[in-house]
Length: 511
Image (cartoon, rainbow, N blue to C red; front, side, top):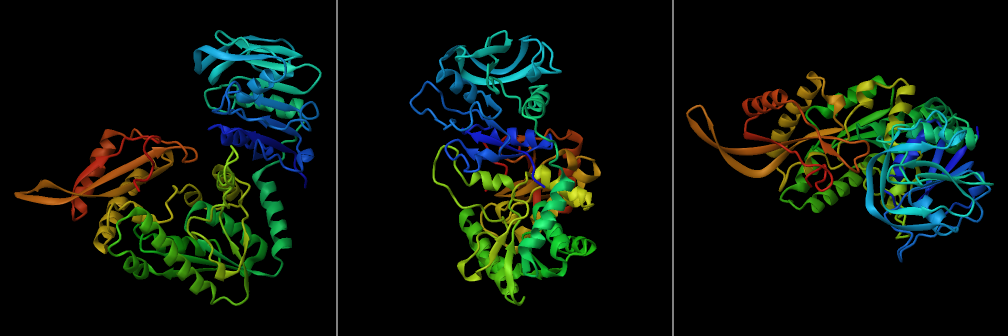
């Protein structure tokens, strides 16, 4: 089935991926491409969206898209930088704003009878984020909406299906943003809303059957959402010809290796569990540099995975759980070096000697779409709701060198924290949570004795994609109970702290 496609040209905005996700939420398929790398099949797209940008159309670093084959021929929505670009280079005027136009604003004028603003009323809240502003509309421009501070908040070009806005409909703070995008894509661009999880499963399974035929495929499972959903799609397509390998690197959560293997058995997957924990921990002995730890884990994983893959005769494909953000991030929006698509976080990089072709059934999906696709295949809700977990596992949550005793301590601490999040009904309200073992000992008192033991930090964040994150305001009572339980139950820990840093400037993981 051929789906309508929407082309999003990326000028480097932090919100570009959010535009795509909002379009997908309308059950319309879209793709993000750098503004200077318009795909050769641009004719096959039903509509085009120009994203915002940190650049100014008045500066020296103007980003010039080639719109000759698009503008006037296809419905186009220009957002923020895109709106200013059209104005500045088409007979209008853009100037520095007297006041930085950032944050919430309300529409105090909307032109009557315009499909673009159907079901949107004056007073609707929008989100502004720009320091330049459009002083004069471009040739043929017709004003569609204003706010108290921004007269030219929205306009269209008469005689062509081109619309432009100086606010961001994709962010949560624009209360009618979804309605506006739907008005443009459905009513103006005539896109059909047929990009659904069920349709994706059906079409992907058929495509995989054709692509893979009777070939054997090997997949490194991580226990996470992406690799699990990829495995189920492949299982539907090729059944017993899918060989899954789940490696225990000794740095998983407490009991995770056995628990996840049992879960996979219930899904009917052909899975081999490989306990290589001693091999990993021996290789990591004495290593404290974060990058060295990551590289060591990646190297040993490839060795173990290759040993296991070589035991399967005539394997031709390696399946990976690559998702769409990995694909997008591999190409710089501002024309920088184009990297190869990131490898799945548990494979780390395919060595030349494996000589396998790669199949990536999820590479068109965002994380939330992966979960919806999994749900449409009746996969276990607890598995689909699992928090992201770093490929190097607890290695990057143990600051400094690794020992078996440190891994034991952190596994116990982590288990208390995660179990309590579940029992308090907080787990699904948190995007990612974990514990960090700090490389410091502190003085404590237990009974009549003084102790000199480890300090652990607890971390819980809210996010949609991991690119930005806020710390979660967990209840004091929860933190009090969890801290008390950790100190009483986990030998070697006498102090617990809670990390209240947001990303940016901090990162989610400590290493």
